[in-house]
Image (cartoon, rainbow, N blue to C red; front, side, top):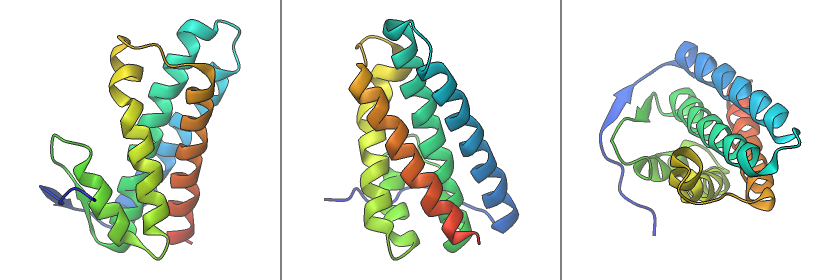
Length: 137
């Protein structure tokens, strides 16, 4: 069940492009970090950056199509908004949900994020970025 959409903020195409560029930058750095040898630290950092990339891409998709993005304290509220963003919104919402599932562990480091989870996070962020990019072309 998709959580209800909470507080939102108006945004436009120009802001969508900014958020998409930020998402790409987060993912690029995540991929660089993920390629380093120190798996224990770097998998968490790569996953954390992938989460940020996914959130930024979700914002871009929503700004591009809905003219608003989620702004509540609970990032999960964005899932319902992303689902409304486009025809493949369900796939984008699923990718965002998977990223948010590891957000606390990746960002706050209390739970080890393994290599496979980090790779999955990178794929989910890519899915969101690709989806947002299609909406802006």
